[in-house]
Length: 315
Ligand code: URA
Image (cartoon, rainbow, N blue to C red; front, side, top):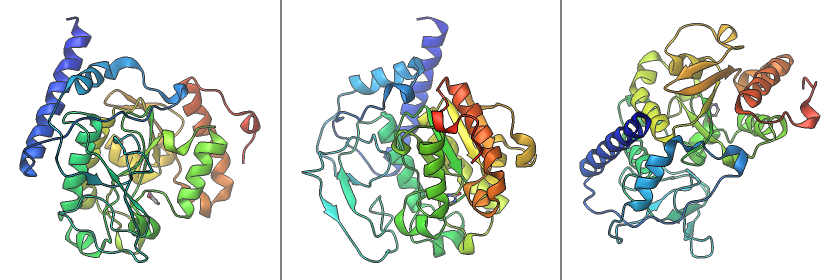
């Protein structure tokens, strides 16, 4: 085994151990068989450095029969065909039930089969369950409708990281679904020529701060263990930090966002680009041209073309 294979194998072993400990803490003694995952288009498919993890997860054979996990985030979590998926709807957001991982919001809940132990989907599901049950920040735990974990493929090339859920996200359990979310979607699709469902979107905080206030440093510290482990499993090649809170939390710095822009940072092997938060861009539309510059830098780093209509465009 060459040194890089050895390092990958060690990493997989560590992730598996973490996951098994987490499962056992959650009282899970049995895990089901893996189902086929959704494949991202070639431009967002990951480089082969996760081959060892993928190989182990494919080889892992585990007994079927555990209770399925119900949620509709993490798009590549092994999913039953839509036709057989059970959907439940509720008109008003309910408080989440920590014993039932998933959303308590107003949108449809798709029942998915749990992925096999050790797969990124299973590791994410396990962290998600911890998040659902988390009460480290008392005020947030008491005021949230539900936690908002993240959405997207479980082995993305690119992650977008925001600050914290707002009212819409708290109601739906999905990050960036309100006005700022619409702008982020436009940045991803119209600006970068990508599909929103091919990138992973997460926040520093998994709970909405009341009144959308800025997260406190204690809240960021409480959530650090979750977003760091989430990113460790996702292993994105690129992370785009949206705004001050995300950039400062991820890079553990107090440097203002304006000074963090314009260069490529690194976080555990991922290239990190910092840009303005979509909410700020909604308040200061003049700054959109600066954000486009950041996104074009990101595309260049990713080796992706700048979509025609954006070339030379500043809005
Ligand atoms: N702002 C964020 O930072 N995250 C969201 O999910 C929505 C708005």
